[in-house]
Image (cartoon, rainbow, N blue to C red; front, side, top):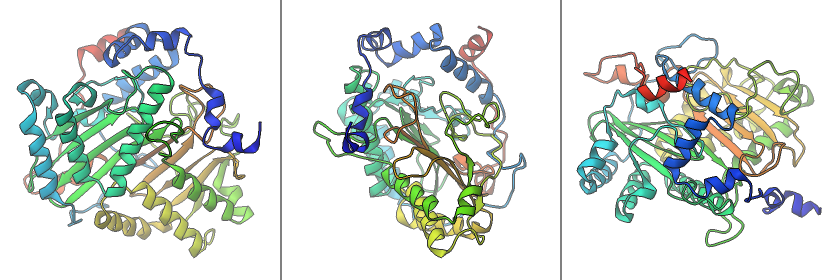
Length: 438
C-alpha cells in the first residue's frame, strides 16, 4: 500500500467491517432503545457488559472529584466574571422549553443537585436514557436545542461539536445503522431552571460527544467533556472534508518531538500502547489508555512524566503546552477561555506532561497534561466499528476534567450565596440493582 493510502484521509477504509456479520445485521434492524435493551439483557460483548456493571457500581459513590493522590485540594476555584453571554443562553433555553410538550418538559427537567449529572456516557449504547433525544423530536425542537449549544459555546467550539455529530452520522452510514448512529443521536438534559442569577446547567451527550455545562451568572464550567471520532475525517458526501482533533494530535506530537532526549525518556511512561509493563487495570477494552472517562469521577490519577514549569521545557515548549490546552478549552467562549488558560499557566510549576507509545511522525500515541486545576487526555484507539486491532491515527478519544471537585461546577456550588454544600450521592435504581445481581 502506498504511503499516501496508509496515512491519508482514506486510510481507515481498509478496515471497514463486514456488514453481513450478526453484530451489524442485528444493529441495522434496531433503533437506539432496542439496541441498548439487547445489550443490557444479553450482555454481549461480555467485557463491555462487565464495564457497564462496573460503571453502575462507581455511580453509587458520593462525588469527590479526580485527584492525584486521593486527597481533594480546596480553595483552588473561585467565583468570577468570565464574560459568558448569560442573557442569550437563558433566552435560548427558555425558547426551547416553550416548545416542549408537557411530557418532554417533564423528561428534560432535573433538579440542579441531581446525581444524574454524572450518568453521561460516550459509547453508542444508550446506557442512560434521560431528557430528550434529538433524533426523536421535531426539527424545530432540535434546532432549539442546538441554539442553546450555540449560545453557550464559542463559535469554534460549536463548529467542533457539530463536526463531531456529523462524523457520527457518517459512521452510521458506513456501518448501515443510522438509527443508532446519526447526526442527531444525542440526548439533552436540563439541570435547574434557566436563570441569569441562579445556578443551572445542562448535559448534551451521545456517541463521541458529551458536554456537561454548569452556569452561574457570567461564569461557566464545561467539564467533564468527551470528544472522539472514528474515523476523524469525512472523506465523502455533503460534509466531505470535515475533520476534528487533528490540532490536538499535531501539537502533542510536536511537543514530544521537541523535548530533549532525557526529557523524552522521562515523559514516556510506557513505550508501547499496550505495554506488558502496565499494571492490571491500566488498559481496558473501552477506555484503553485514558483514565478520566465516563463514571470515573473519583479516580486517583498520579502525576507522571515531566514538569512543564521545570528545566525540562523551554519557553517555546511551554507555549506548545498552552496551545494544546487552548484546543482542549475551545468549547469555552474566548473571555472565559483566556481566564482558564491564565489559571492553568499559574500552575505550570505543578503541571505534568506524560506520553505512551512512539513519537515518529505517523505513530499512534497517548498523552496527558495534568495539574491541580485541569486534566486533558488524548488517545489513539483500536477499532470499535472499524476492524483495526491496533490503535490508529483515525480513531481518537479526547477528554477534559477539572480535578479536585471542579467537575460539574461542584467546587463552585458552596461558594454561591444561598447554596448549601451537599454530598452528591447516587441513590440507586431498580434497573441498576437488577443488573448487578445478574
